[in-house]
Image (cartoon, helix red, strand yellow):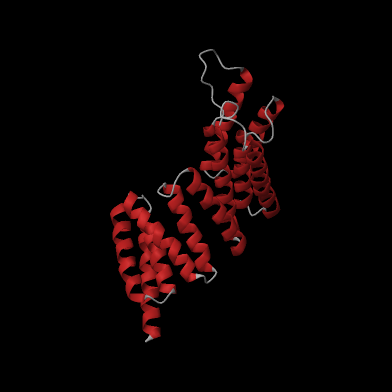
Length: 256
């Protein structure tokens, strides 16, 4: 996002934009979605009234926020249009800039654009999962995971989260073996890197093991997830894992 790093006083337009953008972010984080929408639109208007183009990352980042707002408000047509605009525009931009030399466009800027595309794919995938469009969500997660692997590496926290999320959507479609391969690797990486959400990955691993009817191993993994969740004070996860353990007990009893 644009920032003022010069020593002289910022122009009134830039000062107004920064103020609007900061207020938009605060409203968004506080769940004041109608207000956030108005402020993001006003911020974009300031930038577009100047020399900034529609495919600038700053504009696209705010467009992604707007798509997320529409998704939360169940304005499905606007949400889908927003997500698709961000994804298609970023894909075209990346293709256009791919062969530009370093002195024209630094590698860091190219990487930032790819990461923004990854964020857009991830956000769209979560929306698609919420409305049970599972094959489409899987496709978005696969693309987002590829970008995270390429740009940030396999051990990056976001890469691990995306592996886990892809496993979730595969499991929901009944592809338990494929889901297991992703979540098992995510759990290994989470353990190696001391990922802050390791207990959530372990919970997902246990659920997939349960769906594969590997009840004994599922119970062991659930217990480890529960222990970690308790240590971290994650009350919601503790409750969820206990419910999953109860479900596991029912399934084990029913399989005998």
